[in-house]
Length: 192
Image 1 (tube, rainbow, N blue to C red):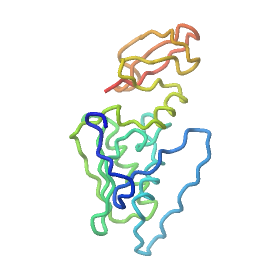
Image 2 (tube, rainbow, N blue to C red):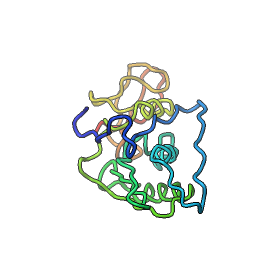
Image 3 (tube, helix red, strand yellow):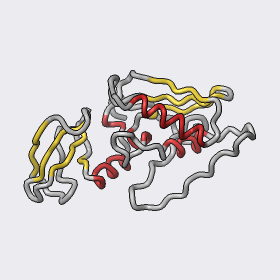
């Protein structure tokens, strides 16, 4: 397990088991049915994770909050569903939108008692991005983060002939790069 990665319990742990990653764009997946409203039914944690896997990141809507790795934990405390979130960085301007989107999605599935908790330690890292999330970024035209500090290739034509234009991109977590083969600019998700 990489340094700072969230603790993911062993498979079969009934309380906090993570779901399989969301599908890559262009594939079809069956969505779980919403919980019955007003019946007092508590959906299982795997179902809640599946719902959260459908909540897009507000800055990069092609990936979900689960793909991004910022949903740290989901657990029932009595009749209250507790969702723990670690923002990509403590001053992230999208934090309030993310919390609103999580609450809206879960309340839309009939969750009445909900508490969102913010956890800053350990700090989020790009190691927490799922492989599916990385694939979705690249399919969308954003080069996924790499420990080497730059993109492996152009997400448009896959050429390795790339150059950095600016360390600052469209959001604080991205840098601006350009392909020297197809001449297209692209964002690179910085390794944090």
